[in-house]
Image (cartoon, rainbow, N blue to C red; front, side):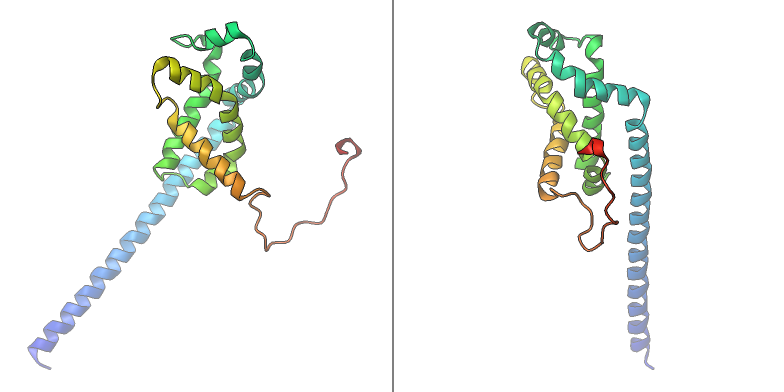
Length: 184
């Protein structure tokens, strides 16, 4: 075999080795990304299940709408700095603002986020939106909690495209269970 052929074969072999190394590196990066996402999702779940967050969610879902009916309370909610009695509203909005940043930048997958926490995101936005919109107005800051809003919009779109949930259509359901009389 001539030296030219040996050189060509060596070049092709080198090309295959470089290509294989690049593919291995991409697979390793994907694996690392998935591992990082699992860590992030675990931390988010732990926060959502914490007693402090749970109490703040109850406040936002049950108490804040009642307080928003009173003009005096609404004036207090717009106070700068925010009065301590409304800190739970900021806790929820700030948490979902951070989650929105993660989703927007691809650190956490949309489908996983919406499947796991879509209801909590939508319900929180629906209760907090009047407060956020009014705080944006008085602060002249349209970007206030914009990533939370972005997340809520995506969640509403996800819900529209999955009105019956995300259960795989080709997988059978478990046998029906009788309803309790109290559920009727």
